[in-house]
Length: 355
Image 1 (tube, one colour):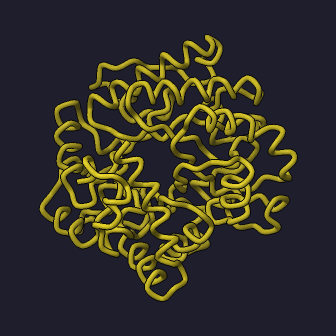
Image 2 (image 1 turned 30 degrees about the vertical axis):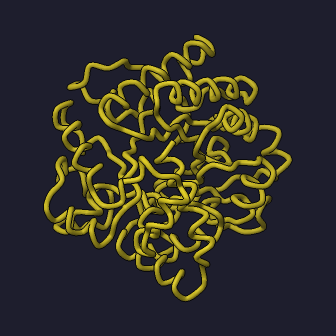
């Protein structure tokens, strides 16, 4: 859909609904009208592993800019390639996305039906050094590209400084930012070498927290100088290495923002800090908006609009996709979000698809 066009030419060809759709990366189940769910824990038994006519019909009305696959969407190589081919043909020319970090968060390497390299954890791999991390990222990127993926939500740029942290742990390269930084950069370069988009996560850092944002509210007590001296070191290295995306955390940082608003919805952290102080010019994607830290406090439409107003470009997995889509559309139509602001995000997204 966009391969032969510049971002500006592609943008001019899009309707308002098309533009709004580009902002969303959704689960396949969000496009399947027969599936209704209150929690992502309900989804694995459906084993949605093929595109249905119902999905095609919904995507015509609610096109999505990306689709994120989870382990239960993946059976084997033959099924995966066919599924991705059919997903790519949906309206919106969706980016095909996955969490394949290496280690315990690996949707493909965690499936015994696939003959791919497997890694104990990024913390373990870090002990082998920068070249080993680069080669691992090249290998991961190569099989993702072979199957048809565009974007890997990796590497984890968090610094695992809190021993009570229950969500990051060995997903991070190190407890030391200076050790983690070149490894994060090496991972970014490896994915890029393989032709896959990488994504630094979880800004402004999920390593110095105790709670799990999948389940509910989480916060950090650090102020910005404290973050800049620790958490920002790997993020700066990854950005310098050319990372095209940064994923936000749903972690509140009241010592930075003066509020308990999650980072994903904070203009202080996204616009002032990530864009301003770190100079990041790529695409900002939220962590899953269906996660407890957001879902417990905000409706789907409210969260989507707030994230855009804060500075996010891509809205990941809202609890109710159609409600979130309609909410953003309404916000553009009534002026809460200007069309110029919408276009700025869509340009960044189209640049990912055309590169």
